[in-house]
Amino acid sequence: MLDLVLRGGRVVTASSVDVVDVGIAGGEIVALGGHMGEAATEIDCSGALVGPGFVDVHTHVREPGQEWKEDIASASRAAVAGGYTAIVAMPNTDPAIDSGPVARFVVERGSDVGLLHVAAAGAITAGREGTRLAHLDDLWDAGVRMFTDDGDAVADAAMMRRALEYIGDRGGVLAQHAVDPSLGAGAMHEGWVSSRLGLAGIPAVAETTVVARDLLLVAETGCRYHVQHVAAAGTIELIAAAKDRGLPVTAEVTPHHLTFDHTAVLGTTDPVYKMMPPLREPDDVAAVRDALRAGVIDMVATDHAPHADHEKDVPFEEAPNGVTGLEWAAAAVNAAAELDERTFFAAMSVAPARLAGLVDHGRYPAVGVPANLVVFDPATTWVPSRTMSRSQNSPYLGRPLTGAVRATVVGGEVVWDAGGHDDAA
Image (cartoon, rainbow, N blue to C red):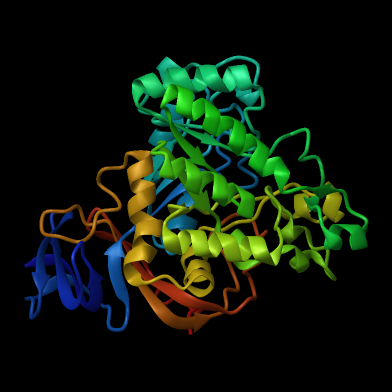
């Protein structure tokens, strides 16, 4: 008897989208087809898509050091509720993930929680302070393959060049938080909304100047380079030109930069809309949507950034940047980007898994493939009223969404089943 059957969903494989059953045993897919026999567990997937589980290459788990915002257990619960089978933890923890022991701690904690695969990104510079390189060999030996000072750009060009050379020689990927600190000291996008509200603005050129400089260094070093949370149309032009030249460049966009623009701040000045990079012009939003559809932007990453209520319950300009996103990312992308099934799973699952080197994830259903899967209903409408995260700083709470995760399967085990949860309608 099979361990699990996913019945009657539209299964997105490498070559087709067909209504078939998925039979799972021993942690892997053992059959695809119709009229499967009995199983210990069955899930009705009628009307839903069945595809590779989502992978997030940009999650702030806050552990170690800031567990009042989030910890690996609560981040894992939020992730599987959002259809994720793997996440990459960002290194802006306390202490930073700038050495092998801290990276191993994060991975081991994820394994202890046991809901999904938790990988760790390593800091580029020691303490993310930008003054000297982190223990890159030590991090590499701990299994780290993605390096970033996320939360801060590597502003020093010479430091960035050394990091690209060092990481590139080992075959790793360097991910850049592309916001120039000398231009990024404001509270929101520099435009007519910031002028009306009297808030200091951050120009779009704060993003493009960093990416333009880095791409020159990538051309020189050949290191794989990833642009985090693209928000400006000008950045897309730079990335497209770099790809045309054959440079090893990838890019991500967040659900909130696909969904909202800077006018969301107008009228409410709610710090739930304060993030870095800031929400930009409607034309920028249209540009990142188009770039995701076209593959210029390769993937969606949540930049899930929990903050406690008291941290966000302050004037807009004093609030920390960031919103939570794991639980609603798929629905937000489904509504905002209007992707076909193949592009949707490429952006949410396949490309991020490939970037992070997670070989058991982001694989289209096929016999013999590890059963890391999501059941996603693109038509269900619902209004989220609660969160699995420890923090509430989400613009999606109380907002109607279209598209819901029915189930998440990790290693052949159902780690999330929306049955019994009353937010979905």
